[in-house]
Length: 262
Image (tube, rainbow, N blue to C red; front, side, top):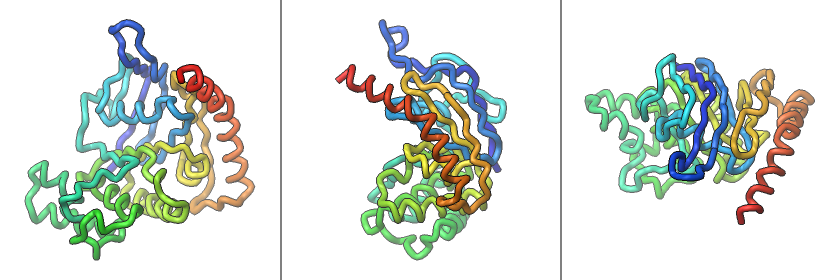
């Protein structure tokens, strides 16, 4: 199961109504189609994570329309799973208890929780670590647990905020492949945030390039490449070049903004 996201003229201003606010997002128009893998890239401080928090329901837009399957977002919900940059696992719970936390909290029967937990641990390749504690896992394994936990309530959309940024290159590449495998099996709509152009091209059906603050959608790039993708192919390199070109001036402007406020 999956869902469609529609954002129309979405603005977010921090401190609005309290004097001079800060406009984080300006006139965002974006549609994420059902079952699609869409990645947002942009310079630091452009509002990528803020937009993800709007979709998650952690924040409300200052104005504009933000719809999931035609219904306005009123707050967080089990129809959206969130994976943070840091795994955010409960250190006092075993792997299986972490994964089953959502269904347990929602009052699902114990047998159903155990069945769902076992299915997800198999999906992410961690069945034999069910009884392990988070401190016994590597960084990559912790993020796989975090993905399993986000999927536990059978969300229609998976929101991922730079989930692999803190990992070494080899682990990151492995988890990128794992995420694509999980996405293909579940059919869940994915909205993914990254600073890595290569990661965006490798994973995405479409890439939304954002401007420097206030963040707007500058360009939508569609790689249109078959999977699995060859990072050394001419088409991959050309798509990477196109995304980099769209980002170049925005990164420079973002750095100037940071210098002006430091």
